[in-house]
Image (cartoon, rainbow, N blue to C red; front, side, top):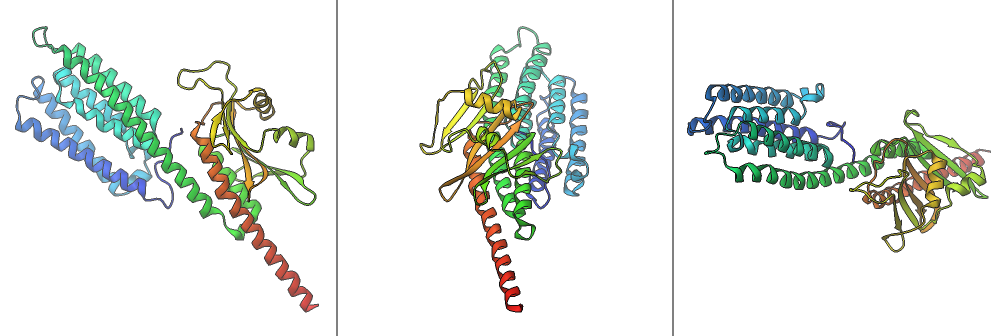
Length: 378
C-alpha cells in the first residue's frame, strides 16, 4: 500500500507516536553510552572515535526530541521519524566497532520498527534489506583475523535480521493499513454534511477514496430518476475535490460499464507478465458466496480498455439489497490494490450509501415542508 502522511489535521495520534519514538531514540543513545562506559571492553577498536560518534548521535537525538515536543516536526516533516538516517548512524557504529561482533547490531531493529509501523510493509522491507546487506558487507570487510573470526555469528546475525525484519514489516504494514482504513471510514462520516447536499457529499467521498489509493480517478455509475437514468460521477486528480457529473449517460456506454454481474467485485491488472509475489491478474470476489472465485478475464480486459487503466478495482453499489450501480477506482500507471481491498471497498460503499440517501431524504423533507408552507401562505 501507499505511504501515509505523518500529520493529519485533527488527529493527534501521529504526534504522540512521534514523541514516543523520539524519546526512545534519545534513551537508546544514552544507554549505549552508559553500556560502553560500564564495560570498557566494548568497543575494542577506535575507542575515541566510537565515543565521539555516540555523543554526536545523542546530541542528534536530543535535537530531534526538542523539535518533536515543540511541534516543529509539523513544519519540518523530514524530522518526523528519519529512520534512514538512523540506519546510516548504525552502519557508522558497525564500521567503528568490531564488525560482525559489534554490540550495535541490535540497533537496526529500532529503525525497522519505525519504518514498518510508520510507512508499512514495503518501506520496512527496504530498511531490513539495506540494514542486513550493510551489516554483512561491513562485517566481512572489518572482520578480525582468521583466528578470531566467528563464522557462525557472521552468518546468523544478518539471517535473523532478515527473518525478524520481514515479520516486523509484515505486522507493521497490516497495522498501518488498518489504521488508514479506519481513518478513511471516519473521514467519510465526518465530511458527509447534510448542509452541503448530496452531490457535494458524493464528490467529497469519491475524492477521499481516490486519494486513499492515490489513483488517477474514482468513478461511480448509478441508476437514478424515474424512469431510471444512468448518472456518472467522476473524481480525478485535477478536479480539485469536485466530481464531474454526466447526466443522463448513454445507455450503450452504461451497459458496457455495468456489464459485470451485480454479485461480483474484482481487482484486475492489465500487465502481461505475472510476478512472483502477485501471480494473478484477476482477483474476482463473489459477494454472495463471500469467497474468491475464478472467471474469464475477457470482460475485464474490455473494461480496462474502456477505462484506459493499468489496473482497476470495482465493486457493486447495493442499497437495501438492491443493486443501484457500480464503483470503479482506476489507476493508469501502477497497481496500488491488494485482494483485501475488495472487501474494504464494499464496506466503504455500505458505509457511504446510507449517508447519501439520508441526506437526500432530508432534502426532500425540507422541500416538501417548504411547499406546504407556501401552500398555506397562498
